[in-house]
Image 1 (cartoon, rainbow, N blue to C red):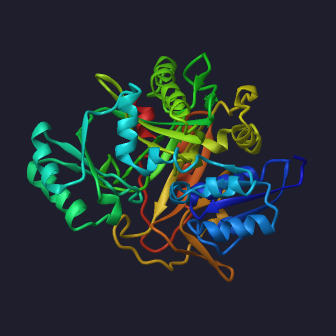
Image 2: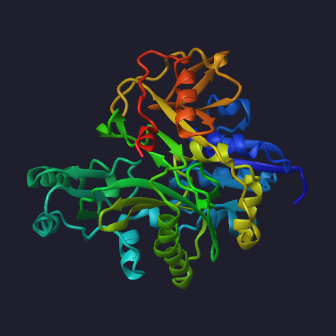
Length: 437
């Protein structure tokens, strides 16, 4: 492929804004489209009014525009089979097949797969009947974790402190069907205590790269990790969200620990998928809990994380388009990635009421005062005339780099304070865990 590539990015959040921002830096790319995009993406790409799950319309658009590379941001189109549809039409697309995307699309599939291939994870049982699930609670001590099997927009995991809470959760998921079809089956699993890390690997069906970096506190090259913050309030308090911020690298992941994760989690997963004739291409994102008993996989995603992407991509010096093409074409073993040795922190600014009910349509001010060396990734915004308005729960991901995590934290919060919209909320402790080490 030459230097006049047309790229289509699918999705509308902060992750997609970060992908568009990074892809735009590639000398190989001449035009970028984003479907449906958002108010911030509109300044970097041509936004197309097609929803991310409308696969027939996306395919028609890609064929009409002769798109050279399609990049899928969110999980829903992957699970629905967008990669299979594009490949069948001879189009290059970055992401896993619908079979491989089951690692995210079904908690039961992922847990059973890990059990078959000896990948460490929490003890679990799965159920498709609420009566059996209630009976199954006796095999676990409390607190216990109950997960809806299918996709529930990051909200299908409930931590239950007592049997009553667990029974109420099972009723809500399986009887009241608060997560609709995602609750046809549930996984009940032991509650794990430890520190979380997010591991991003890119795979081509047989080989994989876990993003490498020259970190600050270790003399050797280690493998890339990030850490996000799921709960809405400081100190990991309050309800779970899609993620309120992230930093990279995460010092909790030492070189020895990362080698262990590579050998006992990522490699067995990629090898196992190939053996079971659903080779994994694209991003395999492992949520890892580092416990006193060792590492355990919490979950897999089959696409870039959000907001982890916003904290990792600004540190990537290499051309992301080259990496994606190598994944699609099965030649990752020839790729070497270059990384910024510093640190990066992303702080999410959310709408009032999030993660519950929130009202969109508030004017965002101060975006034009942000320093040139910071980046504001739009997650839930829309453009109206010359104004940018809120349109989602997570509104912005303010991102800044530094020579250290401490410096990056100082830099990012200086920029956050310049931006405002009615009722905006954000955590003030993103990255603090790294400073405590």
